[in-house]
Image (cartoon, rainbow, N blue to C red; front, side, top):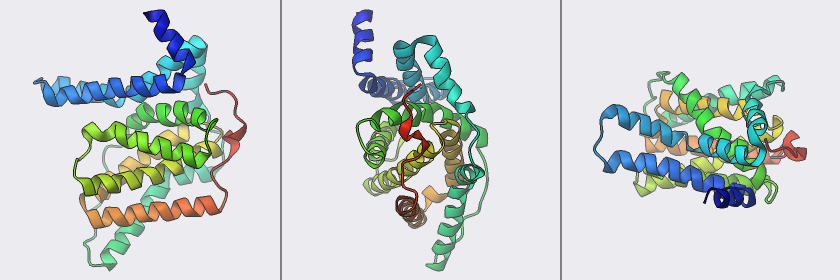
Length: 256
């Protein structure tokens, strides 16, 4: 049985990663809603669910490349020698768009949201738990078969699907969330490809983006959220018209 699973992982590592991720995450999250349990256990299972992409990517990498491969894979977060512009983008671009969205929202009659910054460490941990799977493992493999744009859209769709057990089920919000995730998935690919496959920058971008959403209370007001998503898509257009999605990662051969 174990040898069969190992052979399957080696034959279809990307499919194995997605299957393991969904099994770990969905089983953890769904059990919180259907099984009565203490709050502490529910919190633990929630974190296990969020860890699905990391656990799965490390597991599959270990089968493919052994312990040394896992160390190289995890060590990509220490690739930090890139231009200062990438630090500025991943740390502040989401906040700049949020300020612009807030200003436009006020211009059309809305009330400026009160800004409260919280949850920095938790957002950073969330970035590590998710990004090693989506960008670190899945993206380079998908880009071997598809263009960066197609790979980004595929990951964006799977990313939304993965979140469903912990997302609001209202159709309008889900549709807007899908548009939002598609846009930022393209931007994540742009960052990843232009920083040599470093994991530091997707993690920082993920954390900064989550902190911004919470601080500006963007998801709580649908018009504000729509403006913010539109600005993200405008940024995608600027990226596509400028340097494009390809970058230093184009010639990368080592996926770990």
